[in-house]
Every structure is written in C-alpha cells, then in structure tokens.
Image 1 (spheres, rainbow, N blue to C red):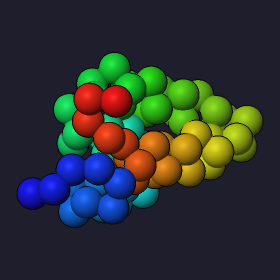
Image 2 (image 1 turned 180 degrees about the vertical axis):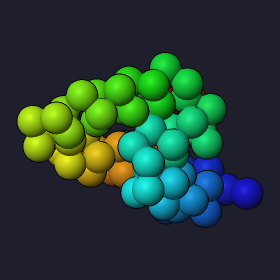
Image 3 (image 1 turned 120 degrees about the horizontal axis):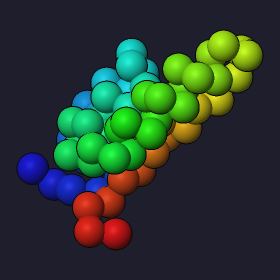
Image 4 (image 1 turned 45 degrees about the vertical axis):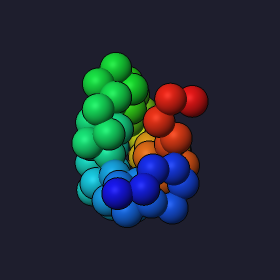
Amino acid sequence: MTTGQGSSGNVLAAICSFFIPGLGQLVQGRLLKAALMFVLAGALWIIWLGWLVHLWSIYDAAVYKPGG
C-alpha cells in the first residue's frame, strides 16, 4: 500500500473521520491526535462549533504523511 496524500489508507481514514471526529487519526495510529480531535469536537458541539473540528479532522486524516 502506498503512503501519503491520496493513498487508500488516507482515504479510508478521512471516511472514518467523517463519521466520528478522530477515528481516522486512530486508524492511522495517532492516538494523541485522535483523542484531541474527539474531545475538542465533542466540547465544541455544545456551542455549535464542533463542525469546524469535525472538518479539520477529516482534512488532517486525508493529508497525513507518515514520518512528517
């Protein structure tokens, strides 16, 4: 499997993050980033800004490059 932006792993991770913020980062093995995205999105949904973190989570999973 190739790595980097546009790879099938990143596409799968972005799809996972679409459903649950941080799940894509968890699939990629980035536990701290996954927890941050999940908690931040949950906290900000209280004031209706969680969608921003949700979109950031999807984008971050899609463009992740291992080792960089």
